[in-house]
Image (cartoon, rainbow, N blue to C red; front, side, top):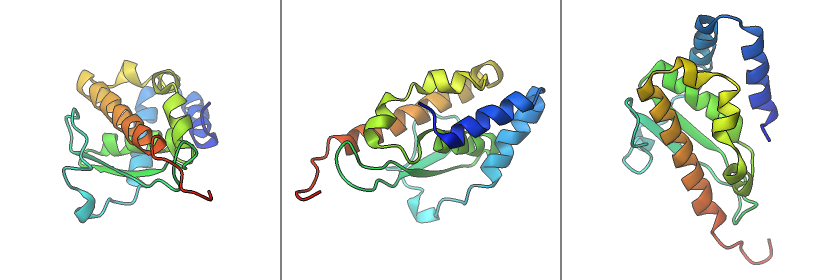
Length: 148
C-alpha cells in the first residue's frame, strides 16, 4: 500500500547498488527538506526515543478516519532528516485510517535500512513511526463535523 513517492524511493534504491550511495541518497533527501520553524521545535512535537533531536509536526486536513494526514519534520542529524523524508514519502497524503494500516516495518524493510542503520538509528526510526501512528490514531478518532 505504499505511495507513489515511496515507490520512487524503492526504485531509486534498486538502481543504487552500493549502500554508501543509498546512504548519500537518503541524506540528500533530508537536505532538500525545509527546516521546521524554531517555534515548532517544542516538547509537544519532539519524538522521544531518538538518539538525535527529532521533531514531527502533524498537518491533518479534515476530521475523522478520512482526514488527510501530512507531517513535516526536522532533526539535528542529516541522516535522520533523510529518514524523515523517507517517512514523509511513505505516509504523507494518506488518510489517517490508511496511515494506521501501513505495514511500515515491511515497507521500510524493502529498503534494507535495518541492515545498515545502527541500533540507535533503527530504534529512532521505530519511534518516529510510532509517533506518526499515534498522531494518525488521535486524528482518526475525532468525530467528523456535521455536513462533511
